[in-house]
Amino acid sequence: MSRASSVVELLLIASILVLISSLSFEVMVRSRGAQLVERYIHSHETPSSGDTVVIHYYGRLAAKQGWRFDSTYDHKDENGDPLPFQFVLASGKVISGIESAVRTMKVGGIRRVVIPPSQGYQNTSQEPIPPNFFDRQRLFTTIFNPTRLANGEGLTLGTLIFDIELVSVRHQ
Image (cartoon, rainbow, N blue to C red; front, side):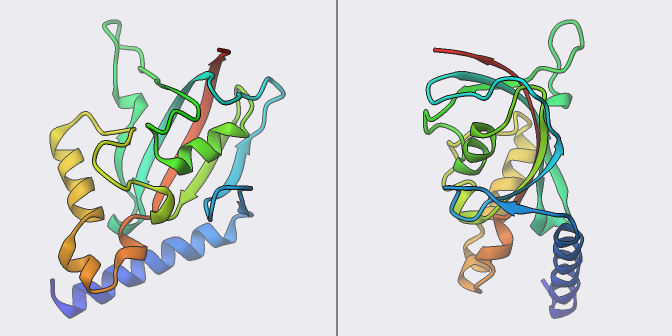
């Protein structure tokens, strides 16, 4: 990568961060740095540890100018309807930034979450994982790029932006 393209990428990341900072984000409690902005707040129930939660999301990578690496709206069932993602809250199978975000949401609520690398993908087995091989490869080769990590770019590589809608909760 040339020095000029590195500068351009850093400027784009900076402009995304300025745009994000103009929104009224708040740091989530016990999230170790993940930030959120409420897009829509609903008055329904909040999930608890051990509950199965069902969400829709758009996942973007800040290091690739907001490249959308995955969306549940792109996953379709046999009828062509969007297939939501479900997981057990506090199971440890999902990246901790999403767990922190969903834990305090109400069913029907929508929020945007900026997840720092420390709360994002720590390895390639954490969910949600893009089902498309090429998207998965691009995501992981960006986040875990050893050359760029060695160059000190780790803080920009793994920053994730998720728009999450809590669709439903099944209590344990």
